Image 1 (tube, rainbow, N blue to C red):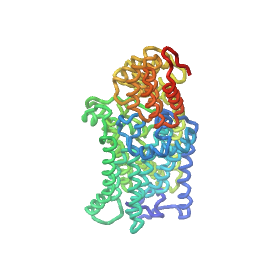
Image 2 (image 1 turned 90 degrees about the vertical axis):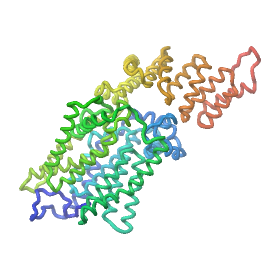
Image 3 (image 1 turned 30 degrees about the vertical axis):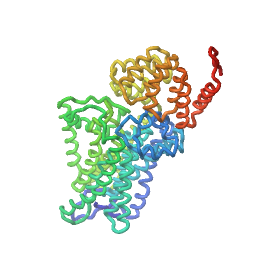
Image 4 (image 1 turned 180 degrees about the horizontal axis):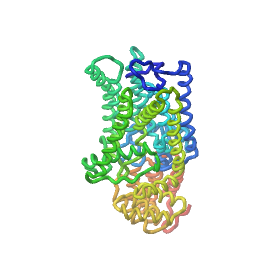
Length: 610
């Protein structure tokens, strides 16, 4: 890897020639620049995200953080490494998300901060700021000058497309993965450059950080390809054949770590991946350029951002796919031609980084149905984009000051870009403040998206706008009548509103899913209220089987058994409930009541009173 020396890290003010010494600022100015730029970048990044400290828990935070019983004890850490992120909902729910480092991060935050949303957001912003600093260090290590490194890291730190990762607490998967991967790459570059103990220590640290990245999110599996590039791109005068062999050897330890990870993943998830949507391979290929172009637009013009987007996959090749392919190729060629020859290799690698880590999200069958495009998927890839953008700004300034060594033109152009991104960040940050703002924005931006509509209806219902919510629930159920979620949400709204139609939709939802406990639990609760004890027992037992981590479900089984006169069996269920959840005082009181009835049975014809 070509590493810039101290005298060459400051970006040159004019194009260099073979026989011409590069013009640079005095060495004393280098020091004054270098030590303040990363501090300035990190402070600006943290300051622009300061509004997040007032935000609430939103979207999946309410279930994945507040409603996750596995985050309530340090003793659950081993279990977090043996299950996927949604295991607390049901052990029968096999997702594609084995991310134990992320769930441990949530547990640590829960233990220290409880339900203090401000503290959670402070930790999330600190994590993003740490990633921004590492991006600056990475830029220096790969040969960018101080100003270019500062520009790239600042663009990364304040780019509005990162709002979903930073302002949404459940989006920390991407910042954790990126922190570990960039740290791994920096350590790898150190290992390549050094010898002796420092070399092997850096190798060990790089592999350890890569393992942690794998435990954060799945796209980290592509990092060995970046290791190949790191092994190839160095100052060694060896032949191309030797350099190629060195590059392959560099990737082998990372491939070994990946192999161990895959074995563990397949064992825990009972398979490498579980398709979420039935999409033929040809359709994946046809839509890949469209999705890539959509991500490029989000990076270039980050306005109109939302938690979800309307994405209609093409069934066959059309002019849209051709146009997207042409636009991507034209953009890549334009960047390559614009950069000077000495920067083209770095620009090419930055562009490849951007595309490489977007490849996993182009495989749409592994993503949730009708949920194929998200800002957070750009967090790691955008490092390449920001480096490329910084190189372009560097060249623009160079072209504008041909015979001048002034930094003013460059600073003006960079400031204009920074102001635009800061405006985009500040103006769109507010949408993550609450569920109502978030899903109103989502439904307005993507009116056909089921996730935005459903969550908006739930939020409206909780806030008392029941008529509007019911209309939206009914509309979604009519469109998605074959999905359990649509039927359950409508049934739940009817149930809370006292509408007798609730049972029909709970039954329909339970027929459409084999692993979601909610419709079974609600069905049992409804029938218990109607004193239909025998009919309540089966859905209550099904809910307890699907969701063993949630307190209170076995109490419903016990209530149905007591109603049928099977009090001894009810005692066993209540003892099992208390054994799993000792803090459930309601179950303890219910157990005492049932045991007292067993010890002092009422005479025939008498009524039991407590």
